[in-house]
Length: 455
Image (spheres, rainbow, N blue to C red):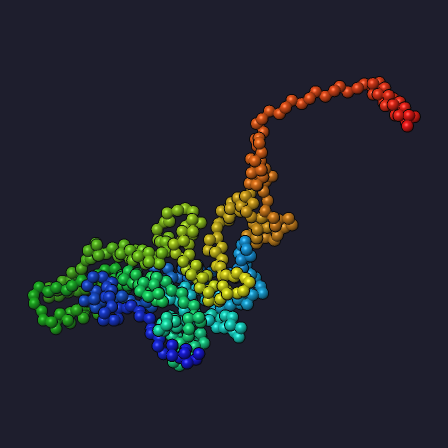
């Protein structure tokens, strides 16, 4: 088995990654003609300095990181949370020795959004149960495929994750949780949203850099010195140097005395070139579009709805849900929860932390749920972190509500709605008077004695 594994590892081929460094790759320009002018986009690390990119990544990762990971078990009717007694609980509550649960999830999502791929290395105990998980640097991991289609991952040195070998080590796919998004060119290679908004983010960075230089000069462009006659290059260079030294930077505003017909003319900016705010706004909108983040989450514009719960639900559906579903499924498979005999286990992200409603809306929902027998009183009290009360574990409903089975029995009768007229009741015989009753009683006694004598 060892020789077979070694032969398979030797025949591994790295997964091709499409980039702009290859001679035959597609040339991607931030704008038309940028390639001829040797103008390229900023690197991924530099693009994080753009506020829109940093805000989108920070918003998505922090919103997902604040959700609690729950281990749930299906009892045949509902999924119930497992609170103790399972060997899978410790790694979900404390993924590794140097990160909390929130830090671990946040790094997972940041790696996915920045590079399109998240690689999580699993550490097992003697039972084969995963006891620790480490998010690897995606720049140090290479996916490889063997001749028989087996998937492996080549890991470079990473001391935090326990990869201490000086050279790279190759592990099978069973030891790696690989989360990826938008696999445009290969099923094992994800693509970051930054690829689509790199040009816009680069433009935004350049606009901010140019604006900073512009405002360093008193929000005013440079000017020019003119002379009535021809001057030599040496004289022009000397005048320029002396003028910048005497009236530039911190000396702006000092009195300028010109001789020999020298004249200073200030330059102006066309109005269409000075509208940097509109151009910067467009770059922010393009970045938000690539990350599927609503603009009101970035502090731009007013939301189209006044209902905060509806806005959060839209944000969840368009931006957050895909990452949550992917993480839940990958943890189910990575921790081998689907292979536990006799049990149906799974991982579920507690979405109450993301879709938590305002108090008035929550009270309205709980009132309607209680009236419809969906919630019990103690379940509603638990939402408000109040202790349970006696008799509050059962849902309640009003007495006039009937089950469908009872209504079906009623409809099965010959006259379910009682529309037929009943038969008239017989007129009862008149009650005997006391004398008639006494006479009847004496007659009964007499007949009884006569029957006894005959016997």
